[in-house]
Length: 284
Image (tube, rainbow, N blue to C red; front, side, top):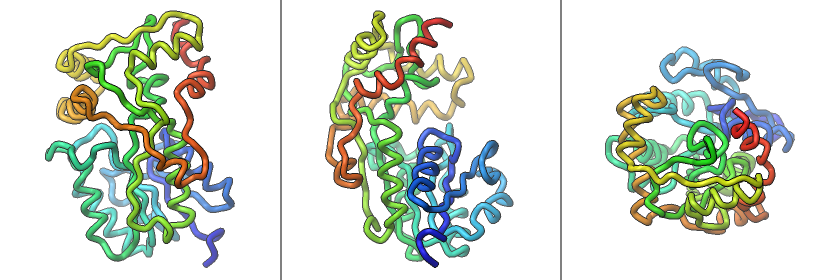
């Protein structure tokens, strides 16, 4: 089987990185099969194992995105990986997160990494990206009435474009042997506070934007009360924000350029590209 005949199953195939991974693979002349609960090439539901076998038919590689808005999922993911091994999958690229080795024990993100490391049926690569820039144009940390609200304690983060994460993932899927066992931490080229991010957005759209650095527990409680996240997801939000508050947010590195051959996107370039999103938010 030649590379052009091999198929990558892209879980989360309608999501922020998955949709980009699929598109970039196709642009490289490879087959990509998107999988999601709706709107993808095949239906895939972590709670319905009967959807897994069909998704894996004829698949050689997998872009693994674990269940969203959950903290406990190691069991279903392990069962899926067993099935993937039985189906002849040769490589898995896993979308993890920055600082996954420091995640609370209640969060299964590190458990999946360790599960992959123990397996010999296929190779794997792990991506541990920084917070994505797209958080500021979607429902995560949007700009509402001239402010973005997220607890960071003035800490900095090397925010990264989702397209750059996808570009690294694609390289691991195109040439899995060259990236077997690799752990990459895609970051942007600058460590920025959210206040600095707000300043860049303000410069680009020509209107004031500020950062409301709210109390973490108030922010988490508000997200739960609004139904944005389930109650048990509080531990995940506490960890993600606490990492930045403690001064341990991601720092720039050269992984994106090393893997893709080009430098990562700056936040200012990202802001220019997405200025219309903030203009639309301001008009609502």
